[in-house]
Image 1: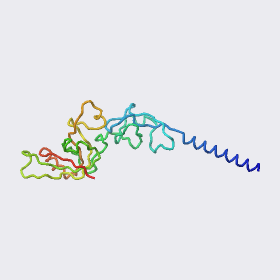
Image 2: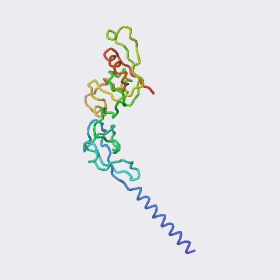
Image 3: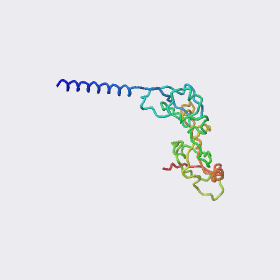
Amino acid sequence: MTRRRNALLVGALAAGVLSGVVYYASAQRTTILVAAHELPATRPLGPGDLVLRPFPADAIPAGALRDPDSAVGRYLRTPLGAGQLVLAGSLADAAALFGSGLGPPTGMRAIAVPVTASTALGGAIAPGHRVDVIAIPLSGKAPAGRAIELVASRAVVLDVRGESGRPLGLETARSAALDRIGSIVIAVAASDELRLAERIPTSTFVVVLTP
């Protein structure tokens, strides 16, 4: 009876020690870099853009950075929101072409199409959306007989620009001077660039969001 009681006691102690080890391991936290605020992809990262935050050691993804010096002076491939992790794979040595981090696929071209909020989904359009672009001839500017036509189908929106030409994004959203949407930059096939360029001064464009 005594041996059995001793065995149970030893087992309980071992279980307690194991639980303590597991708890201690899970409670270990490591500081890693996160975005201190919303960050664009068009300028180099500065010391004030990054902050170290503690995370559970077993929840830290591969590529997480622990040293601010490894990121300062480099560029993000895509914008980051406040508190998002800064990973090694998210950094580049050169600025993204557009604030969205997107660029035209190989063999395609980027072109800006003038729009207003009323012709571009009320302004609810963002980089990464796929859109159809419809050209409506302007009376007195377009050749007689030109009909309404689809000039781009399921084009990827690379950037959204204001009337000032500045990107409408993270930084301009906090600007005191509100900038209205003035154009969208889309990716088009090289074979379509001349036709679309010819339509710009003679058409009004309507943007339709596609699935």
